[in-house]
Image 1 (tube, rainbow over the protein chains, first blue to last red):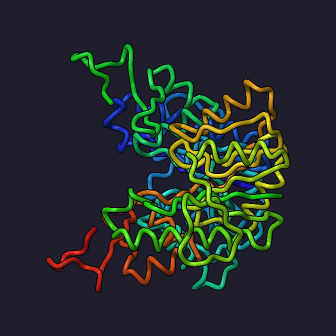
Image 2 (cartoon, helix red, strand yellow):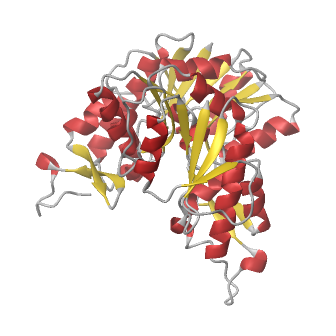
Length: 216
Length: 216
């Protein structure tokens, strides 16, 4: 099955700016993309990275530049007619098994909900569907499918459901990741600490700011 | 398989105090417990609610009062020897299929990680294991299993991984719940709204405070 992975080349992961500099955010976004590609490698999904601009370093996957807004770019993929998976690039916890469960779930459309109302991954087998990623997209995607009489499957996956957007999400990578994203964070000095009975992420060491206090 | 559901009778869900009054928190905690019990009904799991104190209204499940701290109460269940599942009471998104996947996953111990480092559900088949729910429990539970040479399985479930603790978690219930918890929130005036492209929960109507502004 075709799989497209939308990837923002220019200003990725801006919500991580409290804890990562721009160049670090770019590197971390690339590490997460690589983890998604690595998880896909042993599966029947054939990835194409749908980049907003040319990617500087080469990556080990087919890449196509499409500078249209996300919805238009994905709708064009759906209109191509054959079944297609759409997988977000910020899912570094995914494993081959999570992707296989997604691909194996029946339905005209299959959704993997993401934390906070997102649609982190989907399979579209009927070109009558179209996407709307703005806002509470999982609700809107269910509505679109319902309006067009399309059958809906959903895959119940913590790994697909965990997109990494905000500083508190980094804890998930440190706890459950195993790939380049986790290595990146560890190398950058991020670690887990327990405060008032709850886990948080703290950055220490070389990356402390000039006042000597960690940035988080 | 035995299944114990720890349930805090006296002061449940204190992190929801910005949006729910004490009596509402008690009612919502009971609704979530009921949703967990309902999801369990068609599965091979045989529930016992392990309550910190007697529950006032009767519930449709075996109940035992154990006023010891959580870890001691669960360790006593594990020491009983036969396999036991431990399922948190604040998982209103669970479905029978999520619980069946948990029960069917092989391992001396099986974990369902929760958002933020928790262990939302587990199966223990070897009494050499013991629990430590304080702090980043999923990490500590993996360590305990490793130290004692126990095999570890993990179940990849968004529904098991979504515990409802804080106001932002209510969005998950509204989007993905189907039982009493969702009904409770809808009846209490909670709804979804989209603000700056992201979904949030807002409480309106009869429950607005005296100044006329919703409490969230």
